[in-house]
Length: 497
Ligand code: F0G
Image (cartoon, rainbow, N blue to C red; front, side, top):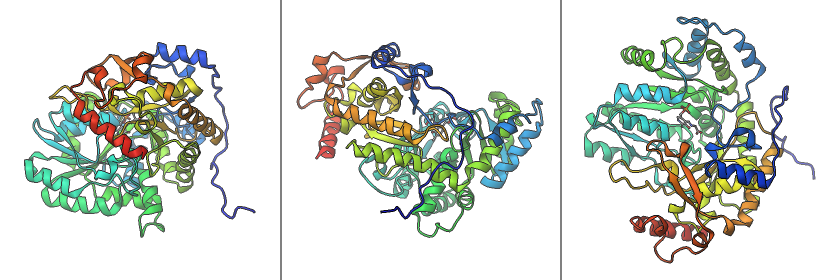
């Protein structure tokens, strides 16, 4: 029978190609060992399909490359800055625009501007760099995302929503003067790229405005969030992505932006603000940490490419294909019976490593182990998003044990074809086949901040991995976490049921 629905294909054709290195298993075994079982420490030339991140890895269009030739590399007042400013004003609606070298540059500035030591910063789950800057400024991050976001099996359509009751109880507990702003992230990365709904943002915004608490949007993947609103939220199917984006931003006081995701560039970001006084202060910090307020760490040509990226990224056919490809990968992976976070988000497929490797305790870093095994299997590079990424509690010094122990397969924009996605799914399926042979890891080197980037690991000897302790998990690295790990073991059992 003929299919009735027109398939979604790439709204572009390929003009230039970059050859990939094909390697064999033995080569990859050595490469991952040399990289201390941390995919961040692999050389990219040793990777076949690189799904480490969707950050800065997009293929730019001919329109963006043409814009690069128009770079005005003046120290002050580059014409490309004004093009960028106009694009942000037109699509995001923030009057004041401060370029930054990437998203964390904007996070640094907003944290320094708004947080006083002892303040609390609520957010819909943390992102690593965002929370680090909040803590560096003396703040404490408080998670106010809905409970469903922490449950890999929940199919809530808007797992990025804020739980208003959690927010209210924080404000009641510490006082509104201790809560400078709420960080509202679009397509929540650590939850699996899960969107918020406009209805939720609207009610949270009304509450925050009544309390004098600002809302700062993490707009990094806001266009993908807008796409989900259009597809899933009642009343928005006839709105354009640009209209939804503008409405989202209208409920917020400013945004931090990593242009390296939604905006289809390899480097760049910005801080968007509405308040002129805040902007003036932001310019002072920007000049100090990033560069003058009309370039903020970016070359003129890069600002031009990002401005043009804004125009391209709001097009619905682009988002249909981009998110469609992520969902294509998810479907193929599920055909192999691999457990993934549902619903599938906008930028990545997240494998539930805890459910896939129940023989490993969380202290044996199941997601880190799976990412290393996947590389050996097919040369696919993924990223750990579990206990390693969650770091340690600043007060107790213990690991933060997230409920989700995930491996992220992040799809770069406009880079790979669906044949590549088939290979990735095959590799994940192979890992599932031989999951009992995947051994856990010991951490042998641990940086104090953002440890996941540079931490080093070693394989736990086979004997230990294949003989998990009964009752108390986590004894291999000491048993101080026995309660946490018992809970973790129960959760896994629950999921496997
Ligand atoms: N906010 C979110 C939600 C992010 O995902 C990132 C980066 C940032 C802020 C920081 O932006 O990298 O430009 O400084 N995420 C990348 C990732 C690193 O792989 O998910 P940046």
